[in-house]
Length: 112
Image 1 (spheres, rainbow, N blue to C red):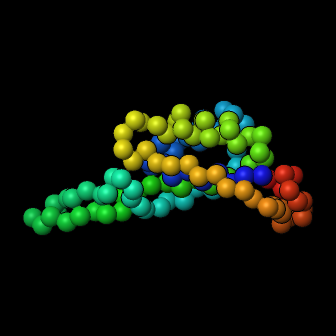
Image 2 (image 1 turned 135 degrees about the vertical axis):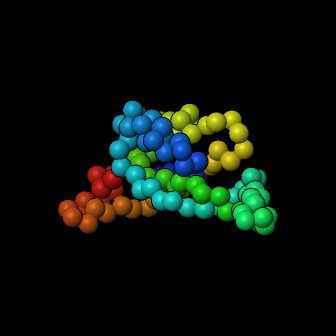
């Protein structure tokens, strides 16, 4: 099993969710996060004073998938989230040793 984490632009959430649904992936955790990479924030003027906004709003998607479904999920995320501009985000893939469904105590891929 693998954990797929994707950091995307907030306005791309529905497109990414629909793309994942199209490849049969339904379960995910979505969090509102803030961060920056090469974008390095931007400056704004508020009431005549200029200030720097370092951390930009992003959406973090997390899902644990069977190994066979990871490539399709990553391809769907990239296709739906890509704008071609700086700040499109990143996808991280890591190994998951075990998953347990609390309600039924199922383990492994049956739990996800």
